[in-house]
Length: 111
Length: 114
Image (cartoon, rainbow over all chains, first blue to last red; front, side, top):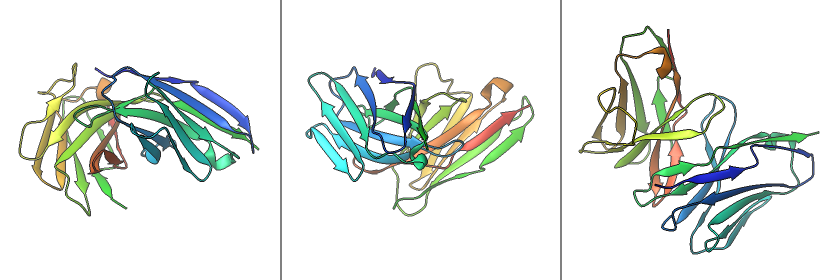
């Protein structure tokens, strides 16, 4: 089955700096890669996603890049703000559209 | 946007009893829903795929006789934790596919077994 690895597990940045979270996946058939933000005790919220036929996607301060050859994808957050502090999960979708999640990254933005 | 609800949001039960959790798609029809479990400070782990009108597909290691899933309509899937034990205490979250691959999650149910 699919295996998704995520790094780093914790990340602290100064407000205004950029944050980068990286994930690798194992199943070359995976074709959809979402990123979720989860605040304590709440549901994961989709913040950005990318399909396998696209190399990069951007939405305001958030961007995702995908390298299918290397089987890795990354989340980039620019101009970080304290409200960006949360746990971020990457995921990959298998043939049955089920999600396999990475282990999560606790992002802390220091004011 | 698409809305997925869950009920109850939290439940406390005694060891050996059963608990039912409901997952509803409020403004769309969901032929496929997923059930996840999340332990504190861990990631979401897929438990099973719930398909409307057919049997659920369970992930390896998930006991289908303990975690009963029923998807009787296009807007409702239920998860029943039977003979619950303290180790079943967790955050249970459902999701539904909205478009092609995009999944929206319910708010989750915090289960505590005493």
